[in-house]
Image (cartoon, rainbow, N blue to C red):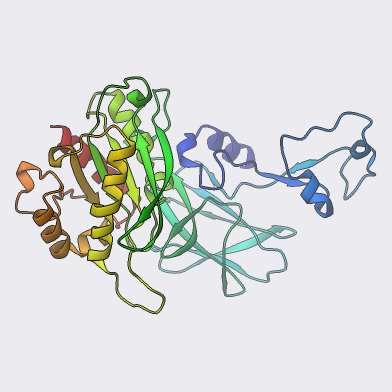
Length: 359
C-alpha cells in the first residue's frame, strides 16, 4: 500500500500539494535532530571525508547519512481512499475531523511519534481538517497549512474530474507581486497581492483592466493565491483565450477593526480600497483607469455587506456593472453548485465570473 500511495502521490499535479510554506513538500527528516540548525537545508552537500561524513552510526543509520524519509501527510490511494499521517510525539490519542464528518477519525500510532489512518471513498475536491492530540487542537506539520477561520489550518486536495482548470500547466505564467502601500484612510501600512498576466512584461504599451478580488470571512489576502489557485486559473483561461488578460488585486478585507471591536467596518475597507489602493494600483501598473476598466468580486464576507458595498460603489461610480447584474449591488455572477461553501465552489465561481466579464 505504501508504494501504491507513493506512486499516485507522484502523479498528482503540483498545484494540489503546494502551500504557503513550500512549493513541493520535502518529506524528509534530519538524521541528527540535535544538529538540525546545521543540517536542515537541502541545498547543503557534504563531500566524502568531511567532518559530517565521520559521524558514527546513530539509530541504525549509516555514517554520513544526513536525511531520512518522512511519511507524507496525505496519500491518495485507490478507490477514492486517502491515508493521513500526523506527527504527534508523546500523544496518547490523536484524531482528525472535517466539517462534513459526523465524528472524528481516530489515528493509530504506526511508529514512534507518527500516527496514521485511512478514509474510504473521500469526495474529490478541497478539504480543511482539524487535528487533535489528547483533546488539544494541533497543526499537522506534515500537511499543507493555510489560513482560514482566523487561524492556521491544515488542508489537502483529492483530484477530481473537471479540476484541471486550476492546475499548474505548461502554459505562459503570470507573476504575483507583493505590494506595500500606505492607507491615509486607516493611517497604516497595507499589503496587497497583485497578479499580472503573462504578456504584462512583454507588451509595455498595453493597458489592462483590473479585477479587485476579495477573500472570504476568516481568511486573508493570501487565500485566493494558495487555496484559490487564482494565478493558475487565470493563466489557463488566458492561454485558452477564454477570457481577456487582466490584472487581479487581492487585499485584506479587515479594516478599521481596533482590538476589542466586534463588528467589521465595511465602509472603512471600501474607503481604503477606493481612496488608497485603487490610486496606488493605477499609478504603479498599466491599468485601464476608469470605471469600464474595473470590476470587483468577492466571497461571502464582501457579499455580507452588500447593501453598504453597493451604495458606495454606485455613488462613487468606481466599478463596471455587468449588464445582466445591473440590479445587483455587488455585480455578482450567480453560480449554482452542489456541496459545501468551500474552494471547489469558489474556484468555479471565479472561472464563471471572469468568463462573464470578457463576454
